[in-house]
Length: 118
Ligand SMILES: [Zn+2]
Image 1 (cartoon, rainbow, N blue to C red):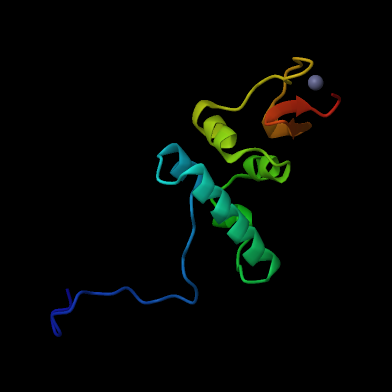
Image 2: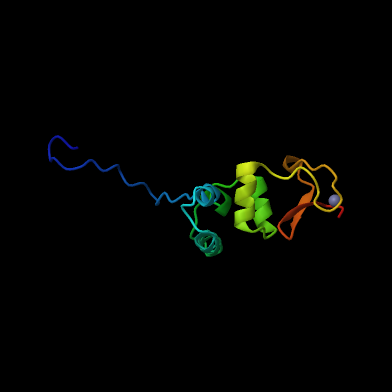
């Protein structure tokens, strides 16, 4: 409250709208449906391509570089949200070789983690 005017205090508006969306947590917490999340992802990527985003989509959507890479492979968002919650798979879904996703060397095929040799 402003003691002089009695109005509610409003923080100064910065140069841009702060509009970060933690897309996976929102799915996990059921604040977003998968369809809504898909729409947001599409919108953010379109804005990025149109030069309307001051950050990169990865930042805008609060994704780490591994999650963002998986999205680049076209993973279904609900699968990825599950991985954030429960942990990533540790094996190639085809040959069962161990995979440390943090070391890359993987791809996503049909929403499953697969080593690059498969
Ligand atoms: Zn494999």
